[in-house]
Length: 115
Length: 114
Image (cartoon, rainbow over all chains, first blue to last red):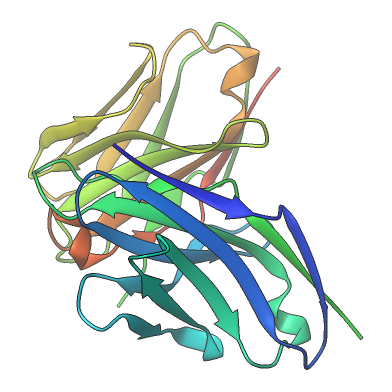
């Protein structure tokens, strides 16, 4: 079984500051990990995914995440926040083995960007 | 390339009625998954279809059902609607059955049950 825990339901940063959104996972098999962003009244947009290649994954809009097996973490970072980054962010995990394919999501972190 | 299209975008139904939601995946994508998003329960997996076969099912009552057609379009049906079924229903499509392909989500159908 897989699960993810997102630490902090709300994160507030100043424009230009570092963005750090935390995600820890639990998986009985090697995981695939994803970060999605959701803007109000919209669906989910894939930011990046880890599928056992490079541990440092670069995504869209300047975001990146590092897979750390020893810490069971997959934190999302962006060096400099922009007002347009204000949204809800979801970390998700899926099993990389077997035939069952589904995403198990965290509870989400709402990012607020202030001037 | 068109994205994942979900229709309708908004729907209001009365308790006890049934509803059918539609999802057209990205052209060439054969896997379609459905998720329910509510403020209380978050994002929860409903089911996944691949080549017209249900491959995986979440922990939802039998009132929730779905199907996939030969052109990969999918429908989701909820019978005997309850107030708690009010949610954003999201459809996601993928090239293949395995998660390494990644999933592209539609904008969702917001269902309100009154």
